[in-house]
Length: 289
Image 1 (spheres, helix red, strand yellow):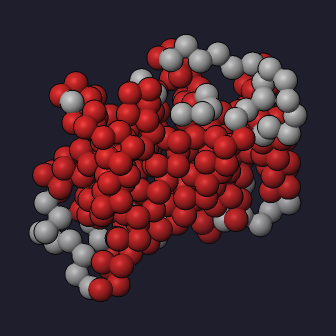
Image 2: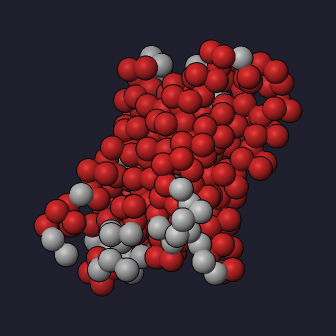
């Protein structure tokens, strides 16, 4: 493998992280108009259109029934993950929602390693989540339903990493994302229409939806899928440890969401847990599939 082939996945994942969090910040402007359900519908629908036009999945797409099964399962997972994540973000500050959601990929990274230091990273993660989760009332208390949605999104995110690698081993990354995204619209779009009604089709809303789809769907999922073919889950997990911080900073700049000191500490603990678990995982896990 050339030096170029080894190095390009890292900036690709970084671009994906920044893109998806800017998109998530912009999505919050749509929530008062069409809700999380309508916003998800627009994101998935426009992402599918862009990806299908770009990758033409009918040429060299899945070939076997098993390949199709994996890609469709991947698409269903994308739809559920995006829907519950937006429902969490609708109720929680973006940086906190991402930190809680991050329990999913963090679990994937920790399970890839069996070293004693894993106990340290688990303790960091538990401490961070303990600060964030609404075990107590007061000014910093979080919406309980929002936390539940963020936890469900975290499970989906962890499964996405595992399933994404399996899909990318069997089907071209871009074509798999295009088919998966299109399949996800079969249930996300009807849910969005049922919630938002005709307002979903207003020209200005559709324009916002297109921009959101490019930032939060087409760009990040394509880059992540292509990168996953060349880097192991360990490295991917290390890169994704930046997500909570990027989300909090994007929300601070674009949404003026101010977090408390303990909340920033909790996000920092989650990042330390993820980065540490990835860095100390087994060397054997570093070899690409």
